[in-house]
Amino acid sequence: MMLHKDTRLVQQNFARYCRTGGKIQIPGVLPERIPYYRKMLSTVIDETLISAFPLANGLIDSKEWADAVENFFSLHDCSAYQVWKIADEFRQFLIVDKKELFQKYPVLHDLLLFEWTEMDLFNTPDTVPVPIKGSSKFFGCTYLMNTEIRILQLSFPIHLQKAASLSDADRGIYIVLALRNPESKFVEFIAISVFHAWLLEQIIQKQSIHTILHKSENIFNQKSTEIRIQLISFVNHFTNLLFIKST
Amino acid sequence: MAVQNFQHTGIGFRREFAEEFLSNGFFRPAFIEVAPENWIGIGGYWKRIFDKIAATYPVYLHGLSLSLGGPDKLDKKFLKEVKTFMKEYNIMLYSEHLSFAKCDNAHLYDLLPVPFRMDSAKHIAQRIQSVQDMLGTRIALEIVSYYTPVAAEMSESDFINEVLRLADCELLLDVNNIYVNAFNHNYNANGFIDTLPLEKVKYIHMAGHELVEPDLIIDTHGEPIIDEVYGLFEKTIPKLSGQVPVLLERDFNIPELQVLGAEMEILEQICNNKFRRLHDVA
Ligand SMILES: [Fe+2]
Image (cartoon, rainbow over all chains, first blue to last red; front, side, top):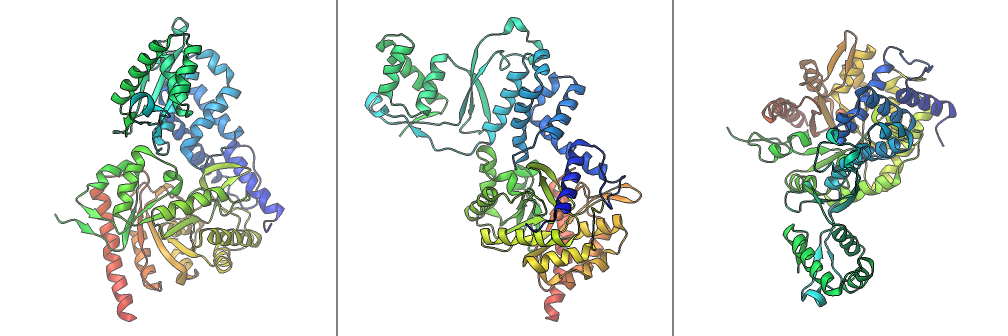
């Protein structure tokens, strides 16, 4: 290691000051200038998080937001080289270190997940559609499934109503599918049934139609003919959404 | 009005003007520059745009996160991704900053000044060599603007010269940064440029800045290039050993493309005049 201990310490102190704003004593550093660095770094973090979470930012009190962002930057070591990915690091930091916010704003958990999912899925690398195993035997042609989707389980219907208008009376289980529209490439959210969510998971996990039918009879306790009808309606639904294609 | 085809001048590609840029009838840059951090691993809408851009113009990479001057280990995984990205899009140039952007395992998302010290120069030079070995190509190193010295034990110029001497890399000369540093730290910009190994200059950056206090300029890239920086650029180009690409950087407060095109035209004209003379002399 070429770097002397002392030089390393200087850099550590400089970085620590930028993150925490504590007192700093580094030879040659101009005390009236170094705050510009802290300001510039904090602005990058704050602006990135506001643009990632416009709804969450709008929901919580501005002082609480500012404190949360400051705590995040000083206590959390950001690990992503892509700055946009700190949004998820921030979300996870809040879940662990800012529990009081989730008590005060019960929908916050869902909002953060919803907004992060939208950005993450919007940016996610392109994927090659996966063949639905055993589809040719069942349907007479091979179907391909676009996997640029995310399944969310929410406690509040934030995909239907404004977060501020929701109360404990709205609490429930809401299954929402986020999908990246194959044509526009923008992310859309739609409500789906538990059965469809389960089917999607099975297909993504590369289970064959045969296995899926077999499992679903047990799990959902339905007749095989009923399940088959539902499977066909599922395929039609996702074909219309351009998420299932035949080869 | 005819579309301007620039031979020397490129532009920092921004998502803010992406769509307009693809169909703009004002200018065609010689190349575009992007930060790998903003485009690696991105799919969907932006990949579709980037693929179109990269099929139309040569792409240069200008990194933000490598932290060549930092105490943390180099991110080899990231460098592998850069290498793959360069291959995929046939990218010939990757530049980075003489600064640090990561410390104690935390990314800081900005360019912090390094101590001008001999151990730091050796450390950075060794890291540049590792990067060059990994990528199989020379990188260009940019001198950053800075607002305070940090525990310096040697002059800025000696430090830069030492890094470049040891590292066997190219120099990215950001003329605005030199102007900003000369103003902030009270030295002569032209004289400072004369102390640099100008034969290593592979690439030039030009940008605007903001005077925030009577004795402090912040390198915002949010304003047009000022006349004094154009003047410094004009004086610098004839000192180079050959033609180099020139980039207009504009990251904030982004005006209409036509306005950016007009700034690029000034740069292009200076290049045409000065490079022609350079050629005549040779
Ligand atoms: Fe630059």
